[in-house]
Every structure is written in C-alpha cells, then in structure tokens.
Image 1 (cartoon, helix red, strand yellow):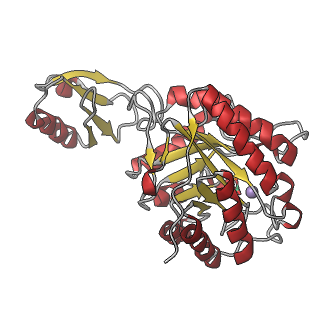
Image 2 (cartoon, rainbow, N blue to C red):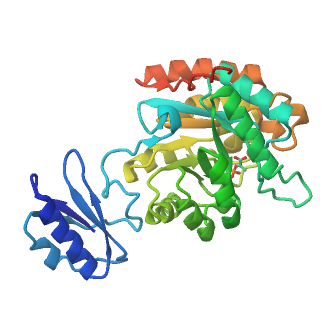
Length: 348
Ligand code: PEP
Ligand code: MN
C-alpha cells in the first residue's frame, strides 16, 4: 500500500503517517520524490485497512499495489531506478552499459588479458566468476577467494568495475568486499537465504532470471532484495529452458519490455548464456539493445578454445570489439549511447 501525500504536505504530516503505519504494526518507507512524496507500507500481504491512514491530514490518496511484488513495482515507484556505481557509472539511465569478460576467472594472466581486451573494445564492467555454480561437481568450480583478488587486481589496472557471483549466503560478504556488483546466478534466483543476505550486503545486485522462472517469480525474488533495504538491483534476462535443443536456452527478449512495464528496476540481457553459441551472441546482443535493455553481459575469453567453462559461447576479443561497434549504432538509433569505461588509473 502506498500513502500519497498532497503537494506541499508538511514534514510533520508525513511523520504522523509514518507513526500511524508503525502503530498498525507495519513498516513505513517514506519516499520523497520530485513529483510527490509517498509513504510505502510494507509487511502487509493482502489489502490492508487504509481508512485510518486516508483520514490523516495531508494525505491525498491511498494506492493499493495490485501485484504480489510491491517495492519493485512501477505502481510503487514510477521513475526507472538508476543504479549508481562507483565513478559515476549508471545502469538504468540513458546509457547502455556493457559488461564483459570470461565465464570464470582462471588465472592471473587470463583475467588481466581479458580485462585489457574488453576495456580496449569499450566495455565498462568486467565480469568473471570466482565461484562457479556448475551442473557437475567434477568440472571447474572456480578459484574462489584467489579469483576475487585477481578481479580486484584487474580493476586496479584497467579501471573497469567488477561484477562477480556469490553462490551461497556465507560467501556474500567476501564477494561484497571485492565486487562492485554482486551477481546472483540463474540457479540461485530462488535461494531465498542468499537473496536476503545479498540484500543486506550494501552493494548493488545483478539478479539473473532462473532458467524456469516466470517474470512474476523473477520480480518476487527481486522483492526479497528490496525488502532487505537494497534498492540497487539490476535484473538480467539470460534465457529460459525450452523444448528446442537448437540453442542452449531461449533468450526471452520480450522480458525486457514486459519487465519495464511492471517494474522500475533496470534490466539487462545476457546473450551468451541466452544462446550458448558464439555465432548467435552478436545478433542477440544487437536485438537486446534494440529491445531497450539497459545493458548487456557478454562472455569474452582471450582463448575461448582453452576456456575452463563456457568456451563455446565465449567471443574472441576481436569479435567483441566488432560487437561494440555495432552496439553503438543500435544504441544511437534509439536515442541512447554506450557507456564509456571509467578513465584508466594513471600509474604511480
Ligand atoms: C554466469 O554468468 O557465468 C552464469 C553462471 O550465468 P547463469 O547463472 O545465467 O547460468
Ligand atoms: Mn558462463
């Protein structure tokens, strides 16, 4: 439920609304906005009784959020959320943000080379898993803490921000120390204890859609993060399972405009996991930007043939450079730009 205040309502009137909500046994979330000040009421699952609130001075109207998710909905907040990252990079604004790098961090030379290559091509954020959620326990599981250190080193050298995955609640704090964005992978989209922990980690979260998750389920998972007080959430469409083995997944780009209508959270697309095939990544990256995605996440490896995970879908660095050149044209055609990487740190 959302209590919308009249234009010019006094701070005292807003405070009274907050106190009344708390007296009713719920939590109040005041949201001062350019257009209107509203106070969100969280903790009520169904239609709460609003009569006491509606009668308070300064209250214009009560809006009942009709969706099962509340704080992530556009009913709750009309303006698209801009997730602000270090250095002034924004996801959810006019610029399309490119995140790129290998599936896994494999070694110092591999991740540093990849970072230099994707930065030279124009990516703003380096991706790479230090902890890998693998279908088989016998395949490469990631370098763990060492991988996080290597990502940090790559950030220091290149100025790229870092997105990397946390796979369990106990690991969130360590990942949060090193990452600029904590990734929650498709297999973990409904790992609710992980979501709660990530919601309290104090870092932006990239939440990937589960491979069999509906859009409502994706948004309810995002609600867990916002319910813990983390507004800095970026959604990611990464393909869903289908009956057709022609591609690894079906990249559901319809999710982009559908989510944008239902939620104020930014959404990016991952054409690498979405297709599973190197030659399909470029066209679907173009399509994602054309569809209005706020960014793309692309797997790029210095030597895809030697990759320890997802080599088949990883681009060669020169293909990625080509992708960015094309992405610039598509972005421009729809009135957007590709976000430039932050300036490279000057060597001491
Ligand atoms: C990844 O980004 O490398 C990854 C494991 O993705 P997903 O969770 O979408 O499968
Ligand atoms: Mn991968």
